[in-house]
Image (cartoon, rainbow, N blue to C red):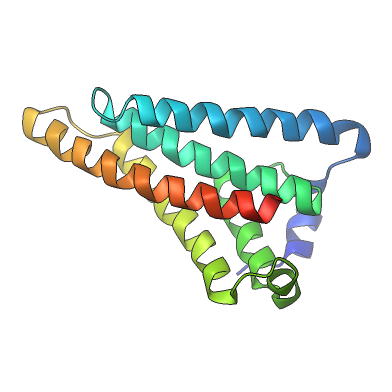
Length: 159
């Protein structure tokens, strides 16, 4: 597991300055909401894109959390670094106590985001057959429920 200080030194993350903070957080606030709407809308007709959009909703709200609470901006190896930073942040017992949540629930957040990333990667390259289309509709419905659950948890942390 990578240390946050190492990520700063390697310039994979940086601090968001005061002038950039509002623009940066507004972008991710709008982006995660747009992605979840797209995910919900496309479950039946375009299940592959529903899953991809659901993942991006999770990814973007996570970056919003990191920006609002820690003023951390992800600069390089975006997906991997976002997961690594989230793992480091939730590993901090003080943070967990401050947010009045159980420590184990926080550990699940990074795991959920990692699984979503893997699912998004699979969906991006699936073959379109009638059988697979039905399978992916089912997967998209299940995945959407998991995404909504994740988003609710992160929204509570952002408050």
